[in-house]
Image (cartoon, rainbow, N blue to C red; front, side, top):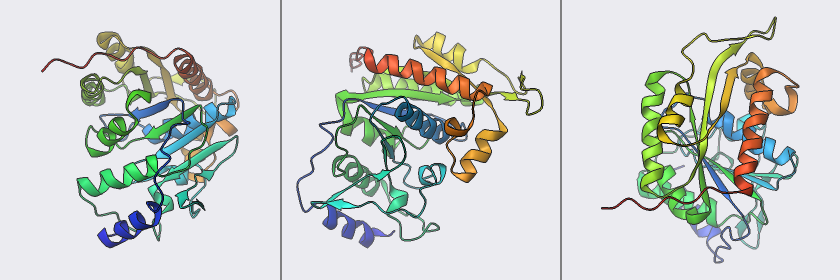
Length: 285
């Protein structure tokens, strides 16, 4: 989609003042300072798991250049509806509404070639000019880093925002994720906790979990930063298969170690939604 396409989209969905997200109770922004740690998989399973637990849930994919949520939920090719000139989320199972830039691109191979202001503008539209309705929680899947997309999200949703940070256990990932913690502190965003993804490997034959890489980096970082550690999610071949096929892992995984770990993380997130952490004070200049 080029600049003209963005302009046309702007004109189509700004004809009526946005209702915003006033009926959304809480926003959980999934962040990571490092790419390749499975953040979108965590976001998709977190949103699906919350919905399966009875929470009225939304999932917003703001990865403008690589929107993967439609594929992970088998929603590729769907188009959002319109109601009174507002976009409607694409519905998944269990009362989960989904919105992604991927739903608005003419073709699945189209590249989005936008600079920062254009990205911030479309993120604002997908946040404010979508009819989210009454939601207990909106999960936002951000691209890695601390750039335009996560900054826009945290500024748009303001005091409703809680952060969940994903890392893999290796030191090279943990070093980058430290910056995500600093990013949240600088923007006075409460951190629900850290998830250590890709932590160990579930043997498909015996079901045992083996540490094929280093382990414990995320837990150590959580302890150092004084934020909760939500759990370790091991690598499971079924996670990759379900993601490729669009079958949400939690909906098909049964009682595998990875599914159990995901469910424990979701339970802790629900605890945080029921008792939100205090918003940290803004750092002094």
